[in-house]
Amino acid sequence: MAIVVYGAGGIGCYVGGRLAAGGAAVVFVGRQRVADELGAHGLRLTDYLGADLRVAAEDVRYETSPAAAAEADLVLVTVKSAATESAAAELAEVLKPGAIVVSFQNGVRNGELLRERLKDQVVLTGMVPFNVLNRGGGVFHQGTEGALDVQRHPGLAPYVDAFARAGLPLKQHDDILPVQWAKLLLNLNNPINALSDLPLRDELSQRAFRRCLAAAQAETLALLDAKGIKPAQLLPIPMNRFPMILRLPDFLFRRLAGKMLAIDPLARTSMWEDLEADRRTEVDYLNGEVVRLAESLGRTAPVNSKLTQLIHEAESTRRSWSGPDLLRELQR
Image 1 (spheres, rainbow, N blue to C red):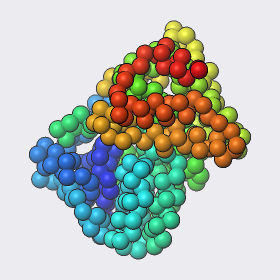
Image 2: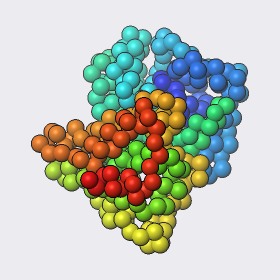
Image 3: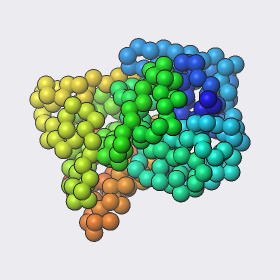
Image 4: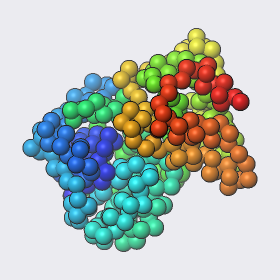
């Protein structure tokens, strides 16, 4: 069973690396910069539970041409959301009929975009619920918990054991959309974390930053309710209670939601990492998705719209915000 990770950056290298460390045959496809890094250092996969796995450089097959996906039986698409359409066009040229393609990307529309172009393949929507930090030198670190969520399909049966051996069990769902929106609600913190320039644990320890997230989530939950979408429950706390919990004073928050702060001190969001590397962020596919949802209902989403604007400004002129300053900006 040939597994190809298409768009192997942080998430792709981590998931594919864990699969390879567990004995699966994995081909990575991505940028020359990453190919050079892994060619020099190999892969090292660590996590918040203490896992420390390695794949030697000579055992990493990293290609830069879409043609490397030609014999794939399973393709894990991990490109940034803005690159989904181009990735779909490239894969349409090389994939064999019947190949299974799983979108492990942020946002809620990438599976549909891939499905429109890949008519002869089986396209499934998936979700990676945890954060991965690229520490450089081929080291990729999982800083938060979570299994891999994916749309249920019998074609995944041959791969279930490989993912389990990798320590990344597949959690299959009949309806993946509520799961995607639940993850997006959590990812609304990505721009707040990026603007704070703090590790996730430090940011979420501060009530002002949590109130920013609560405002973005409450706005989104109201829109989802109007649309008739009920987000799945990914954590012990129901999603519709998150804003209330986030607004609590620090001492009460620590008492009632201490598990939310049980985050690896290294954990940061991919949006922070993108800003650090002067890359385009995915904010249009996270908070921007909320803005599009509001427009479809004839409404507005001022909090998420402002966060989208601030991240676009940060893409060209970086600024670190304090919690109180960011909260005042969102309350205008």
